[in-house]
Image (spheres, rainbow, N blue to C red):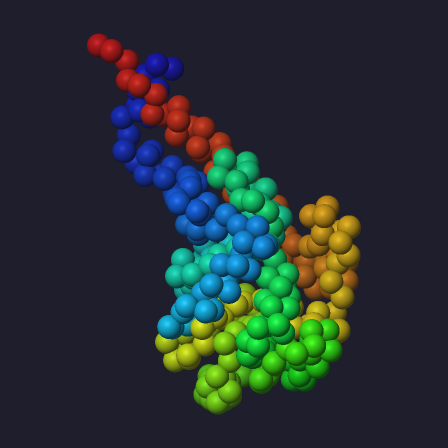
Length: 280
């Protein structure tokens, strides 16, 4: 047994292998599987986003990974690059918050993309920020715009475009024409993140936010889980009950849990491997 321990202590490959699994904290971020999540509450995230909006001279990008999209990024280098490039990364998923706590780099709370979007839309109605909605099936963004204007009087939604395009020319032209300050991108993962990363330099939009399927909720085409489901961290289960076709995505959740538990075990093993060497 002693010889086995000495073998592991000496092996550089063991340390390299474990580095891939390690979670750590850097500044105001919790690093999980190569992605730096900002440690913010919803109010803090809104304040940070609005500060970007007011001071940015180029397009800034906000992304909202959950446990399923985080796993996708491990197999999709373009998605991982988009997450790493983003200016603000918030945890849209109770699984991410749970993982951060188990791995001892705790986030403050779950901040969903839809809640961040709603808070910024409310501020936009007061401060006059111009908003563009991109995504959903034909007609969804227009219906969402109508309902949001009724919900937030004074809100300036200056344009909409569906998300079923094969070339970027038309949506880019529509966005440039009205010069919004906030662009809500609801193309789904990974398309929305990859599109924002690709098109950021072609737009003069201070703030772009990936919001997944939020336009379907804003339009009234789909209901969001009640506050009780959200508090219990079971919003994913509510979606599965109402959209059984999401079963494939749901199956990724046990895989994510396995990754997190393996990472925790690997961190413990790393500490064990790096015990002080025995004196001769």
